[in-house]
Length: 349
Ligand SMILES: *Cc1c(COP(=O)(O)O)cnc(C)c1O
Image (cartoon, rainbow, N blue to C red; front, side, top):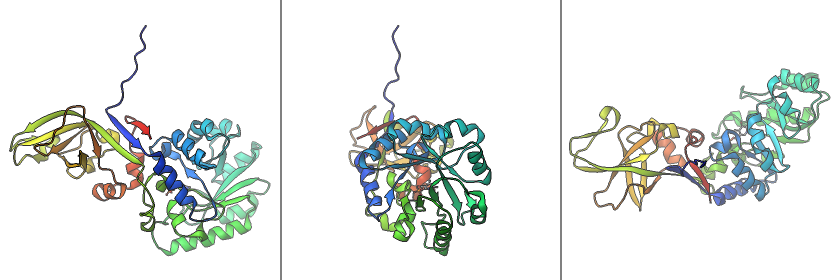
């Protein structure tokens, strides 16, 4: 019996390993703290196992996931590096949490009790210093709740490190109080933007995500962070749309002159959301190809210059500069990366 295998996908992400490693080294070089990597949400959509393999080879020893399934997926490639699961553990996570290949980040008094009752080993602890998302209140954390736990990494998370606001200094002061009061081996506060706030915020270990993958966390990082993600799509059909004729759902675009159009394999199911309708663009051979009409689930239409020599099956590069795409679409760079979906072939080079 012949085995049927899927063909290469008509859409792909070209992913730059050099840019990823460059970004990690730049972030690591901002101070003397160890630099980890947040690889949750499949490495922000790029492919967590490849990211762990590449950054592990570059010297990264600390990886952060949101869930236990994500931790399990990188366990083999992490090759003994430290894995922390940011969301802690539910009852149903306990078999994996107790297996010892990753540490839970304990966030709630219930999680602390669950871990202690199960005789769990070294763990991490998240202190809420003012974001009011995950983490123990400092009062709870210092009330005896944590006595007897072996805390590997004491953690907190900055809410507004991408802006210059008093909240940053307030969270820093609150975290310093936690660090002074709670026994631990290492302390960790800064995400990508927090690293750019300066070495006061670095403590022993930093946890960048966005900037690794090419997102600009603060303006001062812009000259140093390189793009990692380059989406490309194949042309499925070429046509000429006569003057006056519409393109796409709800006829939101109409040709004002006879216009050559390329229909490409890309749509909102691939994270190319409707907010790019009439705003996004692509390029081919140095030519700018604007998105015309509505983005569909699986298809996008591009206007072509008249003389452009292009065929069905040719690949166009989707303009996906994260800052520019964010400005055009109203999506955050985090959403632009993590929304990329599963239909792309992900090709690291
Ligand atoms: C996602 C996350 C990070 C990484 O943040 P970036 O802004 O992507 O650098 C770090 N720490 C925690 C707790 C997170 O949830």
